[in-house]
Amino acid sequence: MNNFLISTEEHLDKKLKYLDDMHKYQAWNAFVHVRNISTIWENLNKSAKTMECHNFYDYYFRANSNLQFISSEVALLPRNRSGNIDKKKFTVDHPKSARFMLYTLIEWPEAKPLTEKFEMFYENACSDIPLIGVIVRIPDKLVNNECSNL
Picture 1: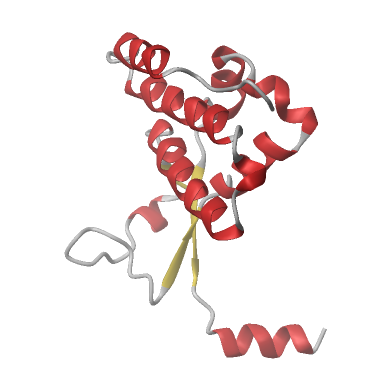
Picture 2: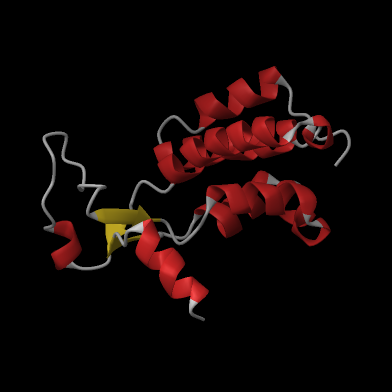
């Protein structure tokens, strides 16, 4: 992915263009991130790539602001004072992993068309409304014990 860099001027112009649509605004930020980071991706170490995935995650999941819970039972789970689900008892899971998406968009040649034009990226990478799944947390010792019996 050479010569994919989006200029600061173009980035800012489109940010202003999408101010009335926060979904597109954040999707544009995600698109710019993919394009710009792809220019140095092969030079990054694993830790730096992980940090870039965290940045992409923030853009990507903010672009999907219409997140829905799978069921009313999940929506009604007990919450802490901040309104978050108790992570000691439950784990929140996104069916789309932003880390997987960033690696795919940058490293998988077949995904290159998604990063050539914003409209293609937006329609295919940012328009789905992912569900948030919540499952009961299983202690690691139980998981490891069960896996060793397989």
